[in-house]
Amino acid sequence: MTALLELEQLHYRFPGSAEAALRGASLCLEAGQRVALVGRNGAGKSTLMLHANGLLRPSAGQVRVAGEPLVYTRRGLLAVRRQVGLVFQNPDDQLFSASVVQDISFGPMNLGLDIAEVRRRVVEAAALCEVRDLLDRPTHALSGGQKLRVALAGVLAMTPRVILADEVTAGLDPWMRRQVLVIFDRLVAQGVTVLLATHDLSAARRWADQVAVMEAGQVVAVAPSDAIFGDAALRRLIGADE
Image (cartoon, rainbow, N blue to C red; front, side):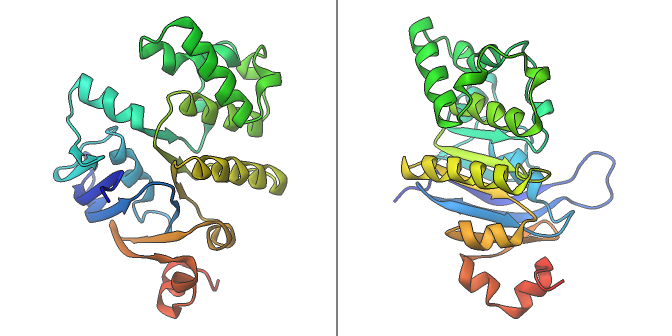
């Protein structure tokens, strides 16, 4: 089976930084997986995700989507972002239109789709994220949890095959965290792969099929959650016993 997303031996150093953020990080995702990406602050989780849809370009290594290398041209980046969607930790970094319906419409409109198809995608994504009743609301008037679901709906309207969610449950109340994971489960049931970077280790253990552990810019382990959390050394590495 061809992997949906392959990150192979990625290296990256932020300009002006003395330390490399990625040091040969590799990760492979297949269709319909629930994968939690865990590790301490500074391990490289967000940096890895920013490479996965071309927001950052590695100094060495390769990103492949559905077996094809990512090409860092305007056309190549648009192609990969149709298949790999990124939801930021802070939805205010992602929402910029005046109303919810405009924000969710933005991606499909940029694909050059006809109005009927854009509307269909907006309604479908809004229903999946349970924000249909918010479509006419101004984005600035939404709560934090509502903003997150609208930001996710905007990504889903592009019909990606992989969702990268960077600490999206941080700061949410327990009910809203559960609702977000329910949305992810619906996506996985449709064959979408979800990669969730999180510090919520209990959620990672309960929710994920696979857990990837990062440390010092490398993915040091990928295994079913029971295997990761049953390994004493890995538990210490990610702070599960603290």
